[in-house]
Length: 98
Image (cartoon, rainbow, N blue to C red; front, side, top):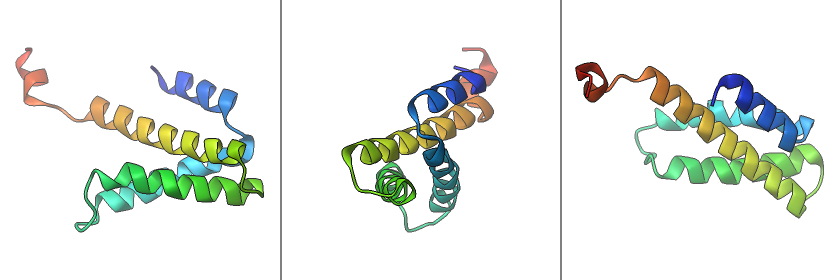
């Protein structure tokens, strides 16, 4: 999946106002990753909760649709991070040609 495919998916299913939540969640995730007392398994859960709260706040109401927007924003933020990480991080098995 390329960057443009990800952007098309985001625009297709996300409300325009909720797209900023994805960017904010990427920054929050970046800082949580560098916080020593936050375990890695907690970061996606924290981003999901923050995404739900932010989406409901940005879209003006607590509703099922807005909760789904927050979950989608967190999912896109996590997917973006993983795509970046898996593309840029070099593993020994990749370097050996195995």
